[in-house]
Length: 255
Image (cartoon, rainbow, N blue to C red; front, side):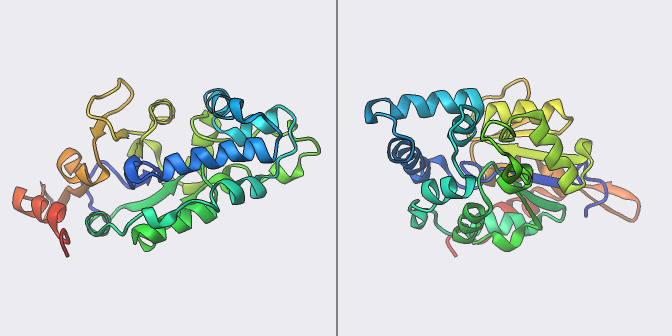
């Protein structure tokens, strides 16, 4: 760990953060959720998309909303359906991302609302699975969901709830004040700020009041948050030179 960096740990969201929202994965996921609502829950085709949007806005996910409404939807079955059909080949290995992650000496942790199987597949496709020491995911936040005797008895916990954020902090055993949190969702960023995390909003060019930093792509970290790479030598605080930072940002590009 670089001793004079303000960060001991970095928590990364996965989908639309580590890889671009333009891959098409997100659109495929929405289609799969719509199909699930029709095929498994019996909703009309004409209402599936609007219902998906409403459930996401109100509950954080369609699964959470369906269970809150009393639908006996098994979480594993849901994730197998909506994630198991995704075209993972759309996610390509990212050598620049891998290089930057390897240059970060702090603890690196994934925090996603998705299930563990999806997280592992996406990270493997990106070629960065070995860059992270921990994955905090749906199962971490909802470890007791199977104990519910009725679907609505135990609510599904997901970002951006403060409960989800606190579970992640506890599971990762981090100091929030020294843990940088990256996410593409404005509400998640606001929740991170509420529990004391320094925040980075990914995929935006303009800041929100809850975001300490804004990145268009996660690979812009080197330029936007150079404090990650601060280090101390012989009791004298220094930062990496511009040439060193440029090397980290560009190495492996085109390799």
